Length: 79
Image (cartoon, rainbow, N blue to C red):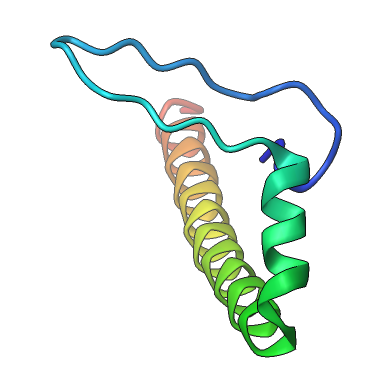
């Protein structure tokens, strides 16, 4: 997420085994997109938007399901 804004990173990862890590600085990434042309930029941001839509729909469905479960529990125990 920090590639898109200036906020601090939102996650920390701890490896269970030895591994190689790839660090991608935001300014290097943005320059890569600029140098790659509008077609790649459009495809990248379109893919990001589609992923966000999918995640938002799942989050919304999970919220609706949790509210339905809470209401069913509340009405069952209200007698």
